[in-house]
Amino acid sequence: MKKFWCLFSWFLLIAPTALAADGSGTIDTGDTAWVLISAALVFIMTPGLGFFYGGMVRSKNVLTTIMQSFFIVAMISVEWIILGYAMTFGTDIHGFIGSLDKIGLAGVGMQCLSGGTIPELAFVAFQCMFAVITPALITGAFAERVKFRAFCIFILLWAIFIYNPMAHWVWGGGFLAQLGALDFAGGLVIHILSGVSGLTLCLLVGKRRGLGKYPIIPHNMPMVVLGATLLWFGWFGFNAGSALGANALAANAFICSQAAAAAATVSWVLIEWFINGKPTVLGAASGCIAGLVAITPAAGFVAPLPALYIGAISGIICYLAVAVCKNRLGYDDALDAFGIHGIGGTWGSIATGLWATVEVNPDGANGLFYGDAHLLMAQIISTVVAYALAIIGSIILYKIISLFTNFRVDADEEVVGLDINEHGERGYTQQTL
Image (cartoon, rainbow, N blue to C red; front, side, top):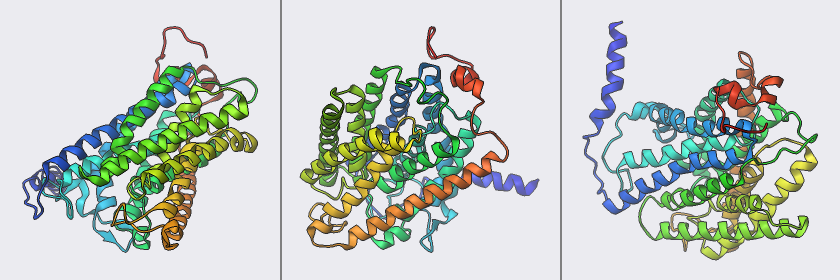
C-alpha cells in the first residue's frame, strides 16, 4: 500500500513540477498565440462534426450522434494527457512507438518545444485536438446502430493502439517519417485512418435495418450546414495551425485550404447537378469537407493553384465514391465517413507526392511534377500502411470487444431509436422515427 501511494503521489506531482523547467529555446508570443488559437479552432470542429453528423441521421438518433462526438472530446483528452502524447511524441523506439518517458506529461512544461518557438504545452494542446477529432470521424460510418458502451471501449482502444502508433510513425519520428512521407496536417494519420476504420467497422456491424426498403434521409439540413460551416471555420486552425507559428507557411496553408474547399464544393455540386438534375445543399456541404480533407496533407507543401486542382478532383472522386460506388457495392457507410475521409485522404496523400515543392516548404520535398518520384513512392507506401493498420487493427478490436459485450443494439431498440434506449432522452418534444 505504501508503494502504491508513493507511485500515485509521483504521478500527481511530477508533471506540475516540470512546469518550471527552463528551456534553451526562445518562445515567440505571436507564434504561441496563433497555435493556441488554432487549437481552439480545431476543438470546435468536433462538436461541429456532431452537428454535421447529427443533422444527417434520423431524429430518433440525433442526440446519440451528437453525444458520441461530444463525449470523445472529454474521453480522448484524458487519454492524450495520460498516455497518448507519450506514445506519439516520446523518445522514438526503433521507429515504432514513443517511449513512455512523457507519460502523464512528465517533463513537459513551459519550456520551448525543441526546434520551435512555442511552449511544449501549446504543442500538447494543439495535438490533443487532433487526437480528439480523428476517432470522432469514424462514428459517421456506423451511425444509428451501435451501443454506447461498445462505442466507448472501441474508441478508447482505437486511440491507444491505432491512432497513437500511426501518429508516431508519421509525426513522431517513426519509420514512415524516416522513409520520407509527408503529412502536413493529417491526411494519413487522421483521414485515411478514420475513414478506412469506419468502413471496416460498418461492414462488421452490418447495415441499418430498413436500408433499401424505405428512404433514410437527413432529418435536419440546416443543422448539417451549421456543422459543415463550423468544420470549414475550424479547418483553418487545423491546417494553418500546423505551421506551428504565425508565419508565411501558415498563410500558404490557410489560402490552400480555402482554395481546395471552394473548388471541391463547386465540382461536387456541378457533377451532382449534371448527373441527378438538381444541386443539393447536402452535396455542397459534403463537397467542401471533401476538399478540406484532400488538402490537409498537402496544405504546407503545395502552392495555391495546385490546391485548386486537388480540391476540384477531390469533389469529383468523393462524389463518385459516395453516390456510385457505395450504392453498387452495397455497404452502409451511413454518413460517408469512408467516401469523404478515406477516399479524400487517399487522394490528398497521393496528390502531395505529385505537387509538393521545396519552394513552398524547404523542409518538405519535391514531388513528381517537380522532378522527383521518391516522395510519391513514399506517399503510396505510407497510404498502404495506413490502410493495413486501420483494417487489421479495427477487426482485432471489434472481435475482442464482441467477446464480452454486444456491439450492435437490439432490433427493437434500433427501431425505436438510440436516443431513448441508450440515453433516455429525445432531441425534440415531437418527432418522427
